[in-house]
Figure: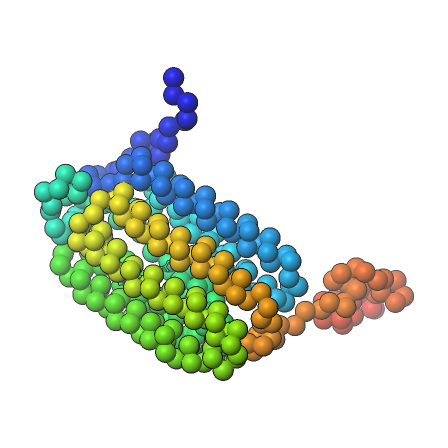
Length: 301
Ligand code: RET
């Protein structure tokens, strides 16, 4: 008798997509691992939201950004655990190692959709901590998108031209790393020792981890050196450190830093009766809106 229910995802959702079958694909163990990371992302998301509710609404920016990152990742990991969100791509290098021998490898495009949404949010976390001006934020995010999209194109191309896209992505990463270790770090210093400390801690973690992503890519989607199960572990560990662990450190680092100090002066309407319903409007007939103004229609009645 089997005690634990089997994970049937790789059987239910097979390896055939658009008429092609991936013969280099994840096994049940790879699927289990993806589901485990999915669970970790989900739990950490709820923790970040719970921590957000301990703060005033206007001080929750970093909690919400970080929670969004892990919730999006949780959905991507659910997809990969279910053996979905991939397409079989002909490998450039056929290997004799039985774990990677074959012609078509599962390429998980859902990973890139996840990164397209979450990496800009992670960069926002960091660059807002450093108090960088918004044109720089925008520019770094555009460069980040170029990095992710070129990585996706490279992964989907089956000829050696894939490495050209990989090189474009690496150039983009060099610029992002320069921003983090140089310009933003110097900028963060101007806001005081505590801001500099949290930026240095999270920025260094990000720099080291992000440099390892192209290594994982070169060994899996690019070079077909490691099996899809090992790819799951490599990217899974990186994502776990780059999202929930990074997020926890960032939120902890911000515990005594008022966002207003970083130039993030966010308005809220604490004293407004119609928002909090702590007190009744003066004559009991008018309805003030969130700005405290009385709408024309209701005052005319
Ligand atoms: C690719 C391949 C192309 C070259 C480079 C890459 C870098 C990817 C990075 C991804 C980071 C993802 C994170 C996800 C977690 O939220 C696209 C693999 C340089 C740095 C942090």
